[in-house]
Each structure stands twice: as structure tokens, then as C-alpha cells.
Image (cartoon, rainbow, N blue to C red; front, side):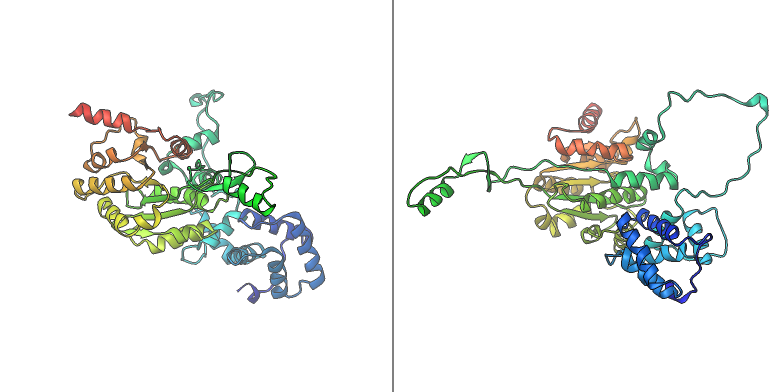
Length: 419
């Protein structure tokens, strides 16, 4: 516990400056902390004193923590910043695998990883000292026309990303929006302009003895669909699934995104409902809980059986009001293709739109030769790639345009050509 160790102030102990840097680390880890709360923390510590580590810990805790899920992150960063050297070395090893030392042999929790990322921001693993090449072999490269690092990251395959690039990609995906246009509704709402609301106008006139003072108007109430995500977490899809689920967590927790509800399901050899985990604010804790519940991560693939379970157990509960279905899989299935086609057809009939994201589309020469892909392709409305940030940005276009087919027309033309 944080109160069981003696308090050791960092070097050059300037209290206000140290608390300010500590607050910056908390803000990088996701806590909402502004300058006003930093000033309050400095004044509170000055009033309480910091001779006792316990008093110092709970004083800062009272100033910076206002949600239960923030307490664990605060505790980890407090230990790292206010000097627990063995713990700091463990977290350095967790975030930078090239560093080894006396750290404990245990995996870091999501809160610990966020704490380490906040405090070790910009830290790099030590590199080997490279010998200079002979002068005659030096080559000058004109990089004036090359893409920027950000643009390169947008188009880079998730499987080819380093740990640092993956962390930056997740930060970009957390800001990515997935808007959806409203659907027409039979119910009306009061409005300044629109059709005359005869019933409301007549009721108001009756209250005034038959005198009609104004015409009340109404227009159709905006109604938004549900987003239902079916994500393949088998061995061939595990890397892509983790990144896409990170993106969907941000969509589920973004206010004003337009979706009525976001429902998430994972499948490998069986179907798992992870909707309640996506509602958790802490993305690391949410994905860790989802991974603990789904026992078939990096297993085989039984798409047909998973879709049959969804159609039987969950379709009526989550597919109401014109839901948009996002199917994330490579289509490499070992079930009976005829049964898979039947379940896909049933799912399409209950969905407003069904969009299939397939990472295999990253290959220019991709052709739907697998039996599972052939069985599924006719029953999707849009067939798109899902291997990079740019492909997920293009997903917004597929959702907002009902006529978007993605690569479906080209794939079907190839199938027809083969006969």
C-alpha cells in the first residue's frame, strides 16, 4: 500500500513544481485535471503538511480523484512518482521489454500500464551502439516527397506496427468518430417549423374558450439505430480484434455519437456478449474484463455456429429499430458453408445494414476463394477492409451512405467470372 512506505521526495524538492508534474502524469493517464485543481492540491498539502506519507497520499487523492475507477490509476502513479524504485523498474520492464532488472515476474495490470505510459512518456529502450559505416557506402536519400509519419501510420497494417506505433494508433482511434444519420420515425416532436399539430392547436384553443391564439407545429422525432458488433477473436484475427475493440470502446463511450446503443459480441468457437464491458470508462480495464470473459481468444473459428447462437439468443433483444451490424472477421471458417449462408441470410433480414470488415482485403490480389467467404459475401451490404486506421476512417462513409458497396461488387464479379 502507498501508506506503508516512507515518503521520499524527488530530487530538487520544490513542492509546487513536483505536485504540478505529478498532476500532468495523472492527466496523461486519463484523469480530468486542470490548473485549478493543481492549485487546490498545493494549498491543501501546505495546510495538511507532508511529514506523513499517509496524510500526503490521501490529501492528493482527495484533490485529484473523483471517480472510483480513477483510484487505482492514481495509486500506481503515486508509487511511481514518489519513489518506489523496485516498482518503477518493474513498470519500465513492462512497457519497454528490452530493459531487465529485479522487477517482479508478473504481468502488469491495465491501470499499471496506463500509469507507466503516463510517467514514461517518450522513454525508449536502450539501443545498441552502431558502428559508423565506411564513408564510401554512405547513401543520401531525398525524403522531401515521402509521407509524414502520421500519414504513414494511418495506412500501416496493424500487424506491422511496433509497440510505440500501436500506442499512437490507439490514441488516434480514440478520437475517431463514427457518426450515423438519424432514421425516420412515426412519432412527432414539437418544433418551431413543420406540419401543423392540429390536436395540440385545438386543445390550446379550447382552453381559451375557442379562441385560436397560435398554430402549434411538429416534425418527425429523430431516432437513431443500434450498432451491433460481431468481432472474430480467433488466432488469425486476434491482433486486429484488439485494436478494433479499442476503437469500438471509444465509440460506445462518446456522447453525442448518435447511436442509440452499442452492443458488442466476440466469437471464436463460441459467442460471448461483452456489451457491459464496453460501457466501462477505463478502456484497459474494459478490454481486460472482456478478454477474461471470452475464453476462446486466439482459438479456432466457427462463424456459422456463432451466428446461429446470435440469431437464436440475441437477435430479438438487440436488433430492434433498424440496427446496423458490423461484422469483423476474415471469413476463414470450418463450419458447413450451406449452414453459414443460411445464418448470414437470416441476420441480414433483421438488420438495417450489414457491413463486413475483412483484414484480408489489405492484399491487392485478394480473391474470395475460401468457401466461408463465398457463402457470406452475397448477404452483406458493404464489404470493406479493416486492417488500418484509414480503413476504419472509411467505415464512416459506408455507414452514412446506404448505397455504399465497398469491394462487394468487384468480389462478386470475380466469382461470376470464375463460373
